[in-house]
Image (tube, rainbow, N blue to C red):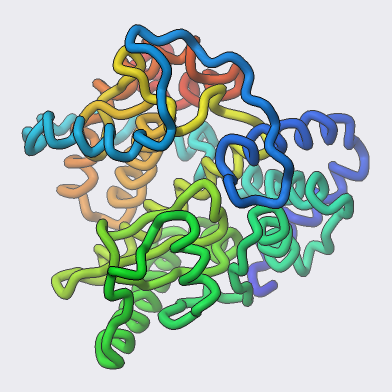
Length: 362
């Protein structure tokens, strides 16, 4: 492992786990729950879902969740330009300085990697091979084939990964997935430049991204970038020709944040309902896309917007940082109203930790 920081944090987490593994049984139960609601094609047998919160509009069909989400987006129409709140930026920066923003808390994420490895495999990893053990553990539980090297693998033509993306419904045979050789060379160069830029802005963040992501798959599909809870450790990008190096950097950080939330949910349990569970009386306006979505997705959007605002401010991109503050207040308010029904105690704590609008934090 190249990063001395990650190796040191891994050594500390492994030593702590050796000294006290009393929480391992809880982590295993959380992983079973996560697998049941997120990994349709995973290795673990499905656990029966507990009773879900009652809804005003009857049972929710998970097969219709994506179509319902698109319907709500169309009904909402083009997002109105919400007013940015630049005065919020110092409070967001304080979240980072006070270790209240979990996705950028590198020690916490490394500890979660160690917990996941031990709970899945039964063995403590070697600090020097933390990433390899982590991605291998995820592949085992997800039935995926995410590649792993010291540096993130940029993939254009991996037929096994392509098939797994199809299995998860993320691409289809009808779509043209591939880029031309010239496009591939350009994209790979931009990704390398973006990772170097992230390192220049925040070396700890860069090392954490390298430690947690096995691959960036570049594929033509709907949407510019993404990740999914059943393929943790992988992100995909679909850059258009107008993307700058800064666009690549933003999208990589964006999807990394999702991965940290997936990992925290895997080992500590954030949500008490599946991601597709989005009844009409349980919707919250997304801080990113600005239309009503399920609580799980809205929670992700809040954390992504906060993290990107912090990163962009530190990268001296204040205009973009200010834009990212525009949806935070409404999303935070909606999540706090719904948290008792949809978030675990730990999930509620994560929400409270980043509530910069609460009197104690303002």
